[in-house]
Length: 539
Image (tube, rainbow, N blue to C red; front, side, top):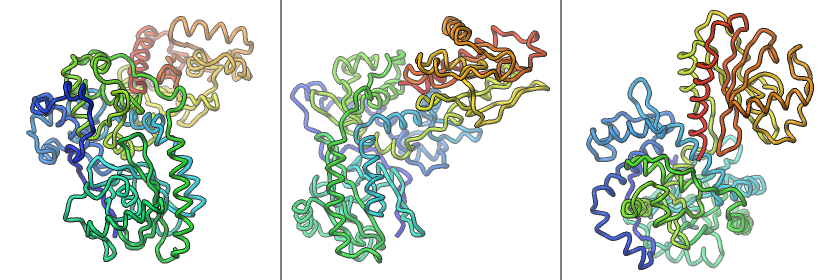
C-alpha cells in the first residue's frame, strides 16, 4: 500500500492541552479564544498550513483554498496578498499561490538551528548505513492521533517506500507510530481506527497490551501493520516535556527475519538515546531575531512569531518580552501565543517560555532543509536587469572553503554584454564581485589570497588589496575595471545573512560604454536589492 500525503491538514486544537501555571491561566483565558483576533490568527495559520502541505509543484487558487479552509474568498484573498507581500507566499501569472522564499529561508534555518533536527541528522545517517535500512525520525503531532516524518534517509535499492518528509503517519500502525504511542498512550486515538492491512491492530485494548511489551523492551516491532511489505523497529525519545518522537529502521519484510528485527531493536534504542543526548542547543546556534520592523497587522505579528520561534527554537520568550518583540500589547501577544500553543505551532517549555512545536517542525520538514538562492533571488535579479538594462550577477560565498561562485545571472537589454556562466568561480581578490565579499571576510581569508595577476589590472600586492577593501567598507560598494575580464567594468554590493557576508550582487558592463552609464544610480539600485536580499536571508 502506498502512503499518500493528505492535501490539507486542518489546524485544530490538540486533545491534550499543555499544562499552564496560574499566571498563564490569568493571561490566556477561555474568553480570549472567542476574541476575533484569535480567529484571525487561526485563519492565517490555516492558510499557511494549506500552502505548505500542498503537494510539491502544486499551487492554490483563491477559490479552491477558501473552500479548503472554510473561509470566505475575500478573507483568503487578503491573507494571500499579505503573505505574498511579505515573501511568505509566491504568486504566479495565473494567480496561483505557493510557498514563498521567506518560508524557505525559515525552514532552512530551523533545520540548522533546532537541536533535535540538527542533532539527529548524523545519527540517522549512521543508523541507515549500519542497519542497511530506511531510517526516519518521526514526531508526534500536530494532530493528536498522528505523527509526521521529520527526517528521512531512504535505503538504496530497487524497492523503495513512498515516504517523504512531512508525511503523516498513524500512531496505531507501524513501528514509529507505536513507539510514540507507547509514550503518549492510547487515549489520544480517535476511533474508528483505519485498517491498513490484515495485520493492523485496531482494538485499543489489544494495542494497550502491545504497548506494555514495547515499554518493557524499549522499542516497538511492526511487521506489515502499516505498509504490508515492510518490517520495522522503532524506539521513542523525548525532546523537552511536550515533544515526543521516535527513530525507526524499516526493511523489506520478505528479506527480514525475526532474528534480524531482534538484532535491530537494541541498535535503534541506542540511536534514540544518542539523539536525546545530542538534542541540546549548540553554543552560538540560537540568537534572538532582529528587532521588529513595526508591522502592527495580524499577518505581521504571525510572521514575527514564526521568526522568533525559528531563531530560538529551544525556548522563545513569552509575556512582556514577547509583546515587545512582536510590537504589540501584552493582551494581543497573549492571544497569539494561545493560538500558537493550541495549533501546535509552539509548545510550552520551562521558565514560561515556548519552543517550536510539531506544526512548525512539520512545515520545515515539508519545505526541506535546503534553499536555492538563485531561485530565492530570481525575481529580484530579473527586475534589476530590466530596470538597469545591464547584466546582473549573483555571487554566493562559501565561508567553509572561502570561495565564491556565480550562482545566478540575469541578462540586460544592451546589445553587448558579458556573461560568465552560472557555476563559474569568482576570485575574491580581483573584480568587483569578489572584492565586495572579501571586504567583509576575516583577516586570515584576506591574507590567504594568491594575488596572481588575472589581467594587467589585477591587484598584486597585499597593500593594494587592503587599500581597496578599506574603500569598499567605507563606501558600501565595490568597483573594478578590467581586473578579472580585460574589457569589463564591474559594480558590486555585498549582501549578508545574519550579519555574515553571504555573497554579492554585481553589474558587469563593457568598458567601452562606461561613460554612458549613471554609476551612482546603478550603485543605488544594487544597494537597495542587496538590502532586500539581506532581509530575506536574515532573522
